[in-house]
Image (tube, rainbow, N blue to C red; front, side, top):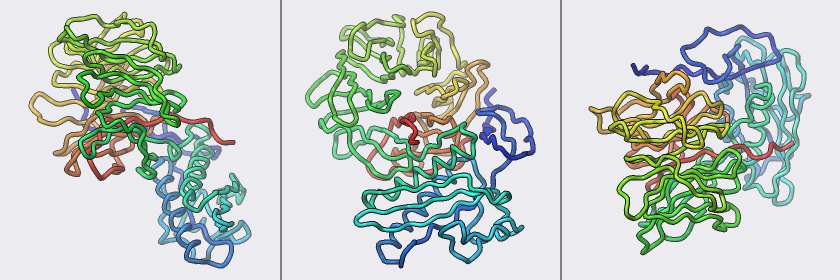
Length: 445
């Protein structure tokens, strides 16, 4: 039986004494042991305000608030209840105001911004309101005021890292890749997790679909069909330099997935004479290619578990397309989802406990996003409504999911908490599909 609502547990392990929460139906991360009430006062100009400073402050304060709110770690205290006195440095803080029943914050964020030439310097603080002790103090330098939003992302992730007892590094500095159709071609694009700072990775004028990140975020694997070519190929391309690393030609190749160690690529491929597709495995340089499934029927959409020891995939060997799991060598094949209907686009959670996928019920025209417990087969529905919701992909901390949806009219990219709440649209133009959330880059010290 499909459970209609996923009760998601969000992590918070704090150094404070906290009250244990009621055990939920399913635990995505360790249980909540309390709620952290966070106040984020608007950062202030350290010097005399100018139009440029005001503009930078508006961007910084808006981005920081949205980052912290979306992290799903905090109860953000409304700014309408904050004291009127601006805070620039620790000496400006009256902690009694922030502990009052009106604000009732556990932690307080504040700071200042000062323009320096064409750039900016940001001093950011995080304080424990009860103990009045500094938890975090950072001084950031932005080479240009246009990079001020990056500073906000950096500080937001630092706050999440500190207040989650290092169980999460946040997602504000992560990126999302997807296939974007504008003007007839489909190119792979990248945006910041919140949809800002778009840039195009491919520019070959063909069809480029199903992007997937390498573990170190330096490369993207995707399926491509060049203009005037009948073939779909798998490319692995460096994000920065655009150099093609691997090309695996076939009649139709799709849905690549790079292994957690970055050494292998699993993908679906069909030879020119075949009507069925299989899951293939190759070294990232294109060598050592072999067929893992070699089974009558259509096998597609492979995804790795975090250890690299198992692969989930879609197969119609039982009738309709369902989620199956096998060992990375092709052995021990078992069916994970047994509900019938049409499954697509599985993606394994970072902790290995859950597989997200889209499912179209036998009586429905649309897909919705679900997760299934890998160990038990228990299923939970995340999206509802009249739109089609597909291609789910986990954030690196396992607390969020990106997916494509038609809820705004055309296919666009959305992000949400792992319980299906707090849905945000991050693209608006063209047709955008097949999103993939990046992993973590090396944490800035």
